[in-house]
Length: 134
View: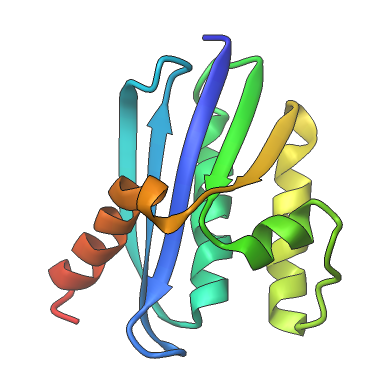
């Protein structure tokens, strides 16, 4: 596989509140090849967004792709990862550093997309929360 496209989303019901993450892996043609979801406990929206990306990058090691494109609907996280914004929050700094540790192995792009372009990952977040009756 040439290019692996990863859509991630994280969300909480309340901020902070019960949180879940969703990850969608697609090939360069847009065909979904894998999905993941998980309830992560109490977290803020931003922490959930980072946790979704961390899960995605950890699982991306299992795919043989020469390039990875991560698509997120969190403008804040994308701008932090692309160096446009500084990470001021200490909790987010730890997660930011974990993401940076995980991207050394392949070229990785972080792209901001609109929420409506991230529906499948958002559905997975809500499924993770609903399965935990939250």
